[in-house]
Image (cartoon, rainbow, N blue to C red; front, side, top):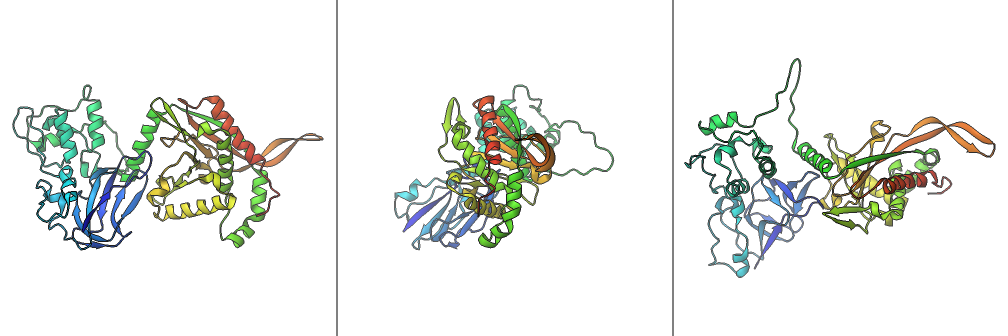
Length: 444
């Protein structure tokens, strides 16, 4: 008999925690290998966590809505007929597991679910007396408050961005970073209910006429945090070039029907654009990096992320792994597959991991150009604008002429800490050169 640990999976290079949305299986339930046990969410994707083995759920160490660090044990699966625990672990975290039926020392070494116990004491009030509150605080928040000597009154006054106004780890970090200058009330003589109403001072907002206040959904809040973090992390610079796409437009119009008939795939402009970006990354490998303190991490793999719009209006960035090893057909198949599964919310954690460079197509919305925000920890992101017919000057053997051409703007936002104007501008121009040199005589 054995006990298998179910670990919170790594959901992306910059993702350090995930939220448990729903336990599909409960203590005592049987599971098959690869059967879904729970659903989790990060700022990038909602996903299902499968069972690594066949067995019975013995313990569940975290509750729904708990935020769990990557790599932590979240459940125990008993295999080979081992009897499961008689009660769910989250509610019984304070009692050490009995060793009378333990098959091996492995059971004793299992981390007890102290991290999810609701019995952790709330910090005392400023006058040293016990402070009662109807507000829920996770053990992590309580421990942070005790360690930093945050009184219960202070804790009550911290605005919470979690579900139902719950104070999260991020709220605590923000509060502690600004504690010296914060105007949050630190001493409140009234009961907790009164403190709650006086807490969380908000910026005055003038609202008049017909208005509707819509709270951000979970994914939008996380995206917002990620975007703000990126702007704080990287000094953004954006460069632009205009590209003649006429040969590509004519070639696609000529082959798209046969392409779909032969390969059962729609050929869009996106795979062609990605192919050009991959070629340029090979020429300028220092655009395919990330930053770790004062170290530059040069990525040998070219994993190209493509921003995809979801029906909810949010964005997600699935990744084409080893895009430099794919031909145009392979890139097309990957683009279509990832886009289809993104819209159906069927992406797996590995589908959004490991990106080294990102593109976003603002032309989809009819925009001619954009200044995208870098997808951390990458150092550059390219936006492709709408392709429009415009008059352009062409050089011919008979002199310059004005002709109608299909033109498109490319823009590149890059991290000026490590990518200067020469590298960023040269890379961007090289992508344009590859697009303009596209072989419109090639066959499919």
